Length: 238
Image (cartoon, rainbow, N blue to C red; front, side, top):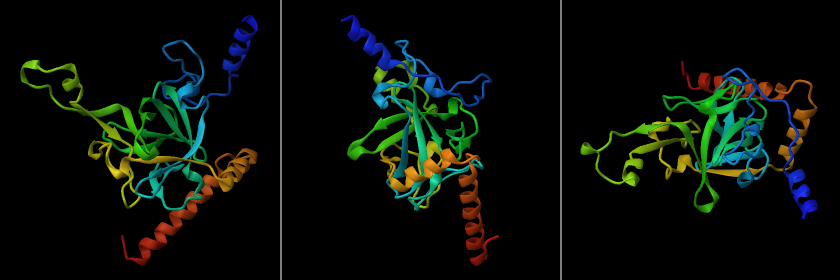
């Protein structure tokens, strides 16, 4: 029994890795938070380690996190900016980081999605699994609070329903929707976490071998911006 207990303790041990900057000052890599039971590291119910995935929206766009702070979607499944590192920060709560941009997905108090350079509370999203394998990601700290019913009557369940969550959402044009306009049942709020393919693994391998970790992302972002400008110029947009 003692040998089994020692083996279990060794299986839970996780070496400390460098932690990214945190908005509050000290290092606070979400992978090193502790849950209510006092266990260190990541959470077993979300795979036990940071997951590399692509978030494919039901509107057929892949979620992108840009180095310049922009969030949108792309129909290009080989875009490196679509490769995410999803890490548990609490039970059912995750942080989503663009592997190539080095930024975290975040939602502010106006319901706008943006890419944060540092991890903060706006980078925390409640992850829930829905039908057909799709997930939703709701802001943990921002939502719509409806006023309580007059007289304060009703059950606690009814009072809880007065709070409407704000979801990560990409519309049919690849643009993010404001959180307060979303619903969990909206097609634009449903995401399928796709495992990486061979091309994706090759890009990740080159990223790790590259002396400049964000070189590929910046290069791709500049090319995409030039294409958008040419497209606007061709249509005579201002």
